[in-house]
Length: 213
Image (tube, rainbow, N blue to C red; front, top):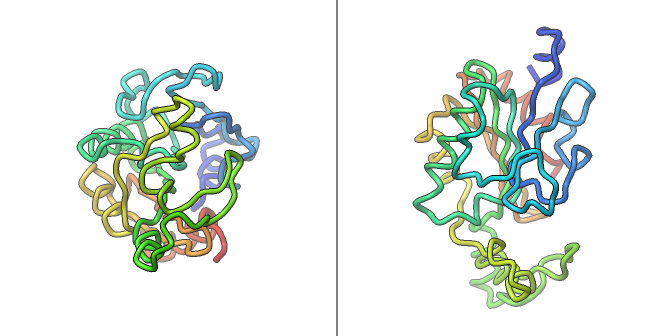
């Protein structure tokens, strides 16, 4: 089942918590979260982003237990210190509805980045972003231009391989996980489920949420 199917069965809108949203809005969410059956709730540490909730992903105390149907986290868990990751992921699991909630997380793939570094290409641009070229050095420690402008919350303080991220989600209380390495963008995509999924469900969710190769 996808989120849209769950919503149709319940006859209600699904609440999607967009954590670390920055300036991004509903149109930037994965496609299954963009429909009229989904209500986006935006959370960010920076009030200038005009979020619905001003806060950090390490403290979701303002969000009630089990009140969220889905959560989307794009390129923000790498901004945490390693010891903060279990706290954040446990918070993700707590706010999601037991038996149906999902967390979709994407972040840099340090295994792929490590290959570029081993080749001596640490400052060679991987791609161009809205804030300028991004090199392996930026992926490791945060975009140098943003940090130089005083945006210290943009620094990177930890990182993951596909397996370490899935292991962390399991330890945080997620019943099942599935993930992929998107080698074209050097990113990880992982879904954590608040229930045990079977292989057929795993295939459906992977097709719905993960970007094409």
